[in-house]
Amino acid sequence: MHAVITRDLSRNFGSRRALQGVSLEVAEGEIFGLLGPNGGGKSTMFKILSTLLPPSAGTAEVFGKDVVADPSAVRSLIGVVFQSPSLDKKLSVRENLEYHGRIYGLSRSERKERIQDLLGRFHLGDRKGDQVGTLSGGLARRVEIAKGMMHRPKLLLLDEPSTGLDPGARMELMAELRLARREEGVTVLMTTHILEEAEDCDQLAILDRGRIVARGTPDGLKAEISGEILTLEAEDLDALKKDIEDKLDLEVEPIAGALRIEAPKAFELSMRLGQDFGDRIQSLHIGRPTLGDVFLRKTGRLFSGEEEVLDQAEVQG
Image (tube, rainbow, N blue to C red; front, side):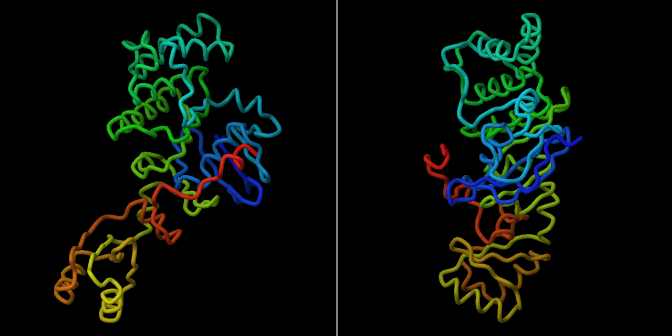
């Protein structure tokens, strides 16, 4: 069974279309990422799947339950971790988990057993009595995820889970999600605008301006770009671009104050560029394709992590 299926999912905020006919499938047991710049539609998708926002058109199902027709059933199947902290900072780690377990109707013995299990899994046992407000961002994020898993959800929805975390804490978080997937069989669907975080997902859908522009594994998406990427800096980019294209019959793309060339044999090309244009090139860099390069190819724009966002009135509407 698929954990998530959406068909032609759309959501409008006034005249703005935050989602435009999004169709995707998330297999049970996957760690699936929705990658895109802020304002690209990821959080709108998250809110629809968590039953917080109805779609304007199309359908969405979680383990066969429709988010509009049967929201209570969907809520029993999901755990939700919001981008903004939802923990009570005045309560201890254990008290936050206890409170969440009571909300979901777990018995006293179930709560005790589950809290003990989650404290161990997320390496929080020695911090269980600490007020959440005293924890580092990485530790607090672990508590958020532990809380979201308190009732043993089949699908864990994470909205920008590593916001504010340093790279080390981000890596630890992903390792803990993979462990939870392995030990409990939970499916994870996360939104992210961090390219490095998206690399750790099993499958990705890249969202831009409310549409899916690419879908596949991180390695598969990058493999669509043959060879490597050359980036050149020069004083007169326009003239250098024209001369390279005329002499070498290459496609050269001006991007963010530099020239970009996709090349199957990048090193050989760099030698040729050095011979023919070395006195005009200030710097030359060769790199393997990234998910940012995939985004650039699909949209014609650099991946900055930021886009125009809905104003607050539209979001509330």
